[in-house]
Image (tube, rainbow, N blue to C red; front, side):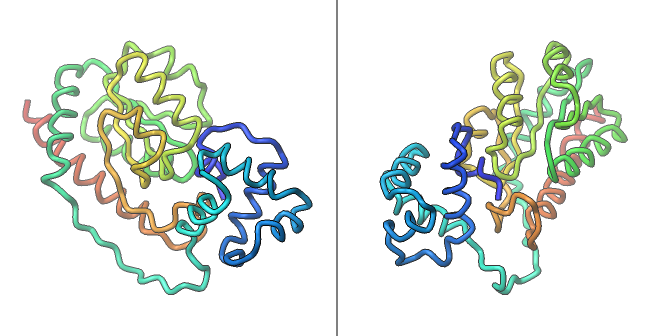
Length: 244
């Protein structure tokens, strides 16, 4: 599990991370187990676990536990392999129109796309989709130099970021930089309550059935739905852009 989903950028000690990893990995087995017993299993004190929960902005252990519990999906749970491909066209139309306007006023600049992990696969697809439609686009991943964005800020018309959790630190840093430089930022995410939202000008949310599965091991329609949403947005975006 990607602990950033819970830690939200906060620095934790190795002991804290061990505790949090155990709780998240065994959450379905811990309901009804006393805090004292959990502390004994982890060779720590109940007070240490409570302090960890408070450090993560929860009122105490129980609030942290139920947060993790609500994210949990049993491994043997039946998953209906269907995807709701309905797109809220009316809801997202104003954002698309504004993105078009930004592009039309800055056609000499690059639309820059940034993502890490599995999200970077979708980001590269979007990059190539825009390129074949004649739109100047730059794709940057975690493997690239940080200077690509920072040294070319004056040539970026908008920053598009993709983050399933909305808590990936490298993504947050790029968004903060863009906000400081007044670069419009578009966020595609599965978590509308994430830190990334506060640094976004436009947000496109896609349902994420498995928010704690940062390794993308289990079935999840998130990336499939995201790809369909992007296809629609590119179609709407390029239709008018190419007619200008």
